[in-house]
Image (cartoon, rainbow, N blue to C red; front, top):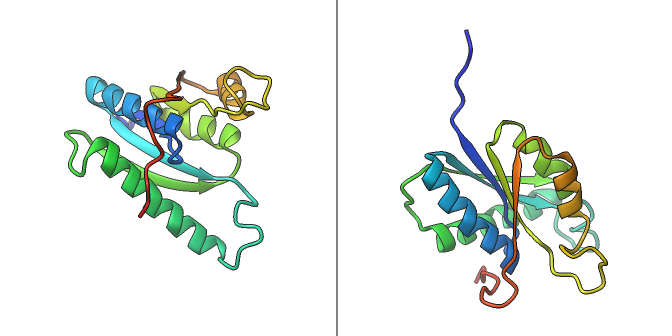
Length: 150
């Protein structure tokens, strides 16, 4: 017997302006597709290096940031299902792996003036090269500000 999974739109969110643009787009897509919005915060290994907090505290902080960001951008009670997930790893590897059952993966371009890639950083090319589903890359370099966790 085949299991029917709910449709989903996966979005990488880290609180940066471009990830917030991605979250906005993913929310529109989830609503339009009648799909679950899966918001993922990927904490890169070594992010906590040099701090006195352990991995549990880092994940807890990332989860609080993700929840706050999603509630600020999408609303506390959207008219579609939202799942939040925090994962430790490389976003370029993690996001395509998590998208194995998604209809769409939405990510923000990282604005990095030192990077030679027009979309910045290594994540976008890695995701575009290995995602099992359609990918939308969003950028919002001027209008959006990072969501404050305070």
